[in-house]
Length: 378
Image (cartoon, rainbow, N blue to C red; front, side, top):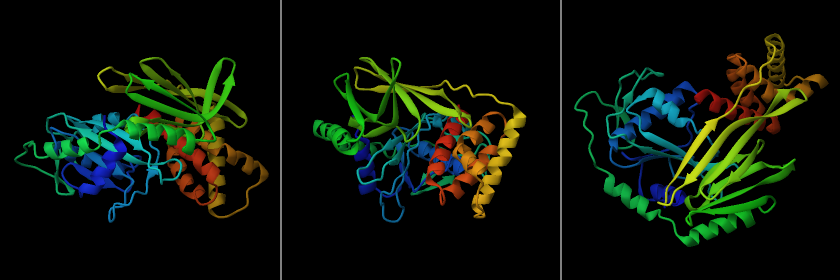
């Protein structure tokens, strides 16, 4: 069983960027250029390593390998993105790896790429790359290759050694459980469950009971023995259920116009543990967007844009606008879900402005964009 934190450390300590490993300060797959560059690197790494795993470590400074972290990224639909744009797509996983020195909500992203064993190529045009392009790694650079395309096994032994050095042990697992419950989440309700005598899942959050159901907010869930953060949210609520074989979360998102708020089921994620030391994660988007009158939403969209424009120009808001600002993230998201495509760009623009002026609304916009990303990729 591989401890992913140790794997990241081994990659950073023993290897510069090469044909099976890349590092990034961040990735921006919400933008066309960032999405294209990410797909290029995935394609190149898959082709350069057809018989072993390749990795992209996200949240690391390029010059000195300093671990600075990135926001928690729970895009369970990232495989859908790769499948849509690549022929012979590799299997891909994005995992969030906590490091003790990073601030709350910050993690290191670990992208693991497993080739299909066939030549991977772009299926269609994206940004400045043309459909049919094939990329390979040359040192630390992903380059197109138009002739003599052969898949060669040149890294299996190196990758196997790195993964072997990242194997877990009982001391690391116990230290992880104690640290999670006693140190990092001493102010929250914490719990753990052992599956198949091998896997330890810890979770913490603010707990409340409604009728016979228990809901958690400010939730953190980790698979301790692999040092993988499975879920993190500062705002949304979830329910947790488990049996001897599975651990399931159902995430809810709060939406509505003004004070008329309601919780909607968003995504159900089930981890199934096997006796052979393996596990699978399956996600199911169960979200049904609330529908509203288009004329009302058009008015709300214009109001939101006016508020952001006034904030950017440092013009004082009226009391009514201040109240509308509280629900700005929700209403932008509802507008997008009801067919106002321009709302996404307006959310991105508002996020950049609010980051400097209002942290609470900025965080709610980040959450709204996270929901939007899940719905789009699905």
